[in-house]
Image (tube, rainbow, N blue to C red; front, side):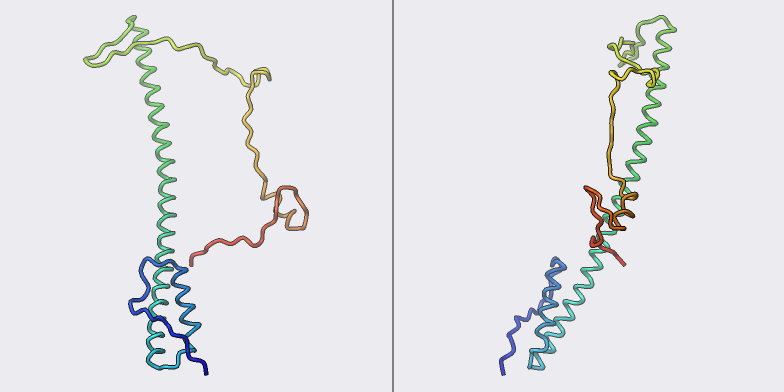
Length: 182
């Protein structure tokens, strides 16, 4: 009868910074060799260490899911912050425009060329020539610029691809996987 393989039994257990893969490799190694251990004392020790690895695996899975949840919550918060900041910027832009229009009216109606404060001076400065669009429908073709965004209509293509139709540049995918947290 062949001797059972010598296990290099680790008494300290898995490290907290081990990856899921490292822990799973150890669990698999213990499970694969557990039946080959003949000594009751070594078997009890190996089972205890296997339990330690299984507990660490459960903690690692839970911590990984909690970290993923944390990152997604942070992304959601940032998206909301972007929306909030964009609204605040738009509001501030409108306020600046109203104040500047009021200053312009004040300078023009007062007949002055400037308004002086203790630290700052306000004056009107002529802008360089520019073009305002009054009616885009009337602008000749040679003075138009087009911005086009092209994307595949995946919703429309999916039933056709599912029914076996071949569409150049598109592929019906059934083996894609994503991580689901339960």
